[in-house]
Image 1 (tube, protein in one colour):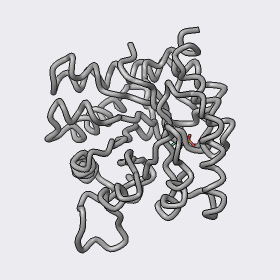
Image 2 (cartoon, helix red, strand yellow):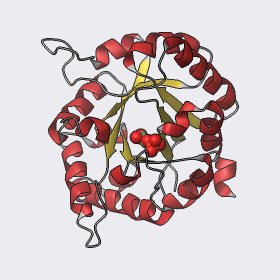
Image 3 (cartoon, helix red, strand yellow):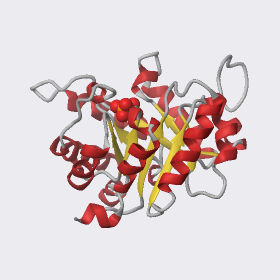
Image 4 (cartoon, helix red, strand yellow):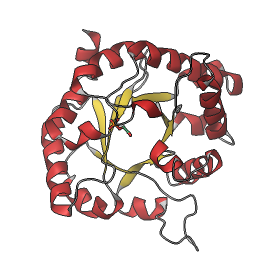
Length: 258
Ligand code: PGA
C-alpha cells in the first residue's frame, strides 16, 4: 500500500565532467519529467555543480539533492560540506550512507549523526542501506538489521516519518544485476519488521522505502508493482534524461495499477 507520492532520485555520482553538461542534463530531465507530477523527482549532482543546476531547476517540481553532507554544521572539518551550506542553494534532499561512501569509511554511527543534522535543517535524508552479498543462510538479514537499528537510534516517530530509506544491495549497484521484485518485497517486509521492534507497527509501516541497484526502464515497472517500495534511487540510468524519465513514468499511479 502506497502512503505517499513515489520518489525517484537520480544520483549522478561523479558525473558529468563539466558544469555545462550538468546544466544541460538538468534541463533535459526537467523537460522530460514535466508531465509526471504525481511522482516526486530529485536530482543529486556533484556538489560543485549544485549552484548551476539549481538555477536551471526553476519553475519545475524537480527537487535538488546532494550526494552527502557532514554531520557538523560548521567547524574544523577540512573538505566537508554541511547541510546548512547546501540549504542556501535550495538542496532539500541529502543522500547519506551510500555504499560508495561507506566503502571509504563512513560508519553507521556517522550516518545516524548526519540524519539528525539534516532533519534539523528540515531537509529529507535518503538513507542507504544494503548487504554486500546474499549468502544462502540469510546472514545478510543481520547486516540489514544492524544498519536499520543504527539509523533509527535517537529518531522519534516523527523524525522517522521524515526520512527515506533506500535499500540498495551492494552487489546490484552499477553491476546490471538487479534484485528480483520478490527479493525487494521480502526486504521491504523485513525492514518494516525490524522497525516494528523499535516503534509502533503503524509508525514502522509508514516509513518511506525506495529501491536502488541497476534500475532501468525495462525492470522498473515490475520492481515498483511487486517490490512494495515506493520509488527508486537511480545511478547510471539517471545520466540519460529519457531513460530516467521512463523510469519515473513507471511509478505513476496509472502505470503502477496496470
Ligand atoms: P546504479 O546505482 O543505478 O548505477 O546501480 C544506484 C546507486 O548507487 O544509487
